[in-house]
Length: 616
Ligand code: M6R
Image (cartoon, rainbow, N blue to C red; front, side, top):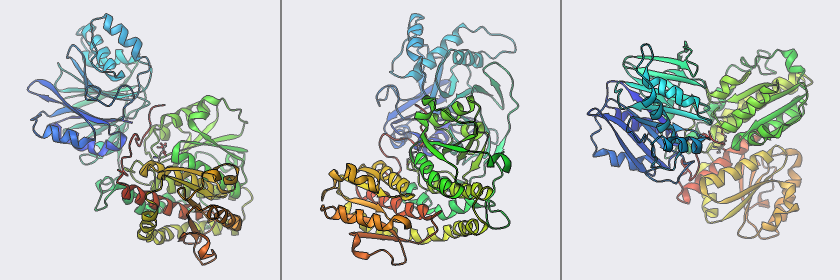
């Protein structure tokens, strides 16, 4: 949550910062602000609301300097007001900072600072940190071989409890910028005579792809043409530079009206990328380069715990069905936020598998650390190359889905399902899954991108369906077996982007309570693609219709589903059970998208949400 960016170079900082913030806006959009060096002073400009308001405000402002910092906020401490917007300046005017994260001991620090004569003008924890750095800066003597500005940031951070990604300017040091991170991401971009700091590479991808991903408890000091990285204990770090392999088009709309729609339509490609190079030569199984586990070790797993949040949690649940069915390994699914505090008893050969698009979700990262603390091996499925989860896991699988800018997970969700199917195939073939069964799954996976392409052609007809339901206030999403996680994801997607209240249930559970909600005003959306339970699901549809509710059903094509069973039928290509959930997920995404657009919602930036949740 919150996007931060910093620039130090030879070009106008204002436009570079605003462009960076535009690409980071998915991380938060309650307010935005920049601070730019101008005529030997740091000038701050902030405004409430999305970035457009700041762009309008700063159009008339000169802000000609070549260094500065910027922030797009997802509010944690304090209302959405201009005074709570970042950047924050210390009360003595020396330090200006942007911050992503939460300073947990901010009240105690604030009290200490007020006794020392510092005053606070906002309700934020971040302003406290700016003042704490200023306090240390005032105390810190000029010393040889020790930069006073850098040292004051370092000393302040030693007293901080909580999470931070920060970029800091000092009124006495026009050619310097300091950044630091702890559990909130920060990446250094190295350009041609210019440096960038940002929450992720999207913040500077148009100017450089040469990046260094900072680790927790590291500081970066940029000074003129040079930079250095050190730990909070002052140890020098020889950081590894990485070439980012995205191209700019990945973070632009390219003619689509919304990122969400663009990313839904990118799924044939993201699924192909998830599978590229991962089929074993004999065509009956998958293999992965990064698991860091031998076949023998994989065979010895007797339980898997899957952990994630939100859509990634729904992907965990879908993975449970796949791994249990094809690999016959017992699986449990946990909300990362619960798992981290639950002290769950775990057996010796338990493997923990983390799923996270961003690789930065704080609860998921904490779950990973908790499992590792107990000595368990943790693997991760993530799209976040170089992310905290990618770096801290013992091994894992990259999704290669490309950047996902829309706040709603779409292509990252199906790519997680695809990798789960590959993993189930791999684990299954190490156990009892036969060559024939393995080959059938591998072939189904290979056909998948083409079938998804076919399914995307339904977009216009799904929009027509959405037009008939656009005014409903509630909706139930129901599915059995592997369709149950898709029902949950469908409900989450609809709530998130259209603000229609929606609940997902296992279809048979409906009769144990939710059926009381069914009325002409509460339609039901059925995921009726599980072959084994299809007849039962059809009975559930009849039960709902008998109570006056309208029904939509996603069904496998091929004419096996009686046409008059539901009011609106969306037929997707029929496929192997290992991939059918992915095909069923596409209409659910398109339905939520069209509902959101028809209802006038900002589908890319739904209210109150942020793409990457780096607070508890
Ligand atoms: O980056 P992660 O996959 O860890 O994010 C977890 C959730 O915040 C995320 O899946 C969220 O629920 C989706 N954006 C909803 O569409």
